[in-house]
Image: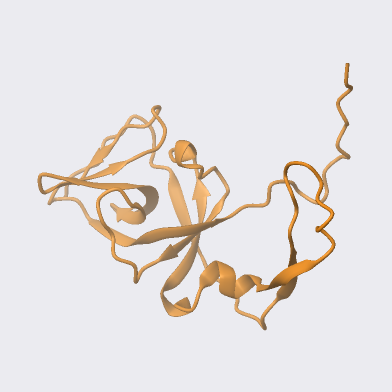
Length: 163
């Protein structure tokens, strides 16, 4: 088997097991990001968060926790949880979770002149050329992202002073 030589270790994607529960319905309110609107006092609809995030193909949907910074320019950061669907068709340019030499990694899938590459979205990382000797498979296609932008246990936000 061919040894993969990269300047730094592969960023990893760790498979998580989703726990399915009863639908979690939450109201969706329209919030203007510009000037306040007098029409903001009504609820738009209700949202089942689980169905919205995982969709109806739950048997083919998996969650992975990202470990590393190779996809930051695609908006995928260290410790993010990504949604991956193994039933979706993968084409050149899609973001995928692939197994390379027994390790999961998240990269752009590129197929150029019958040559497969896994390409990071960070110039500090090098593309990985897939060879026939490598233990390689595509687990599934990236389909969404779950990110908490701020922990509920953080210090209060300090309001900047205006001049």
